[in-house]
Length: 99
Image (tube, rainbow, N blue to C red):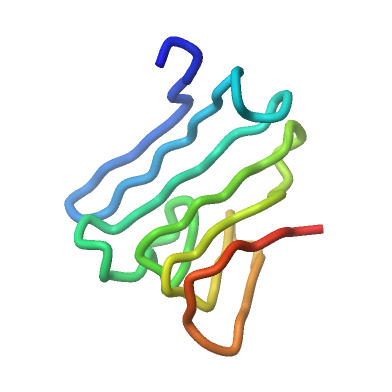
């Protein structure tokens, strides 16, 4: 764990998010954002820092901070910092790749 750096985080009641960078495994300068609801059944709808109908979101950002990849657990919608990243026709668990 010595190479994994917790850059930011937040926990309140039933919501949590962490921003991590891992110099061993991530591309240069990339960060991972992981957000989840405590019971893994409630949507992440409080806007800090993601909004989704999914109870779990993983988002990788490149060195410039742009979203590169993501994962939704049983979700159809994802916003990051008030910018829409994904709107699907139905809720599903899936990997997302952003241009």
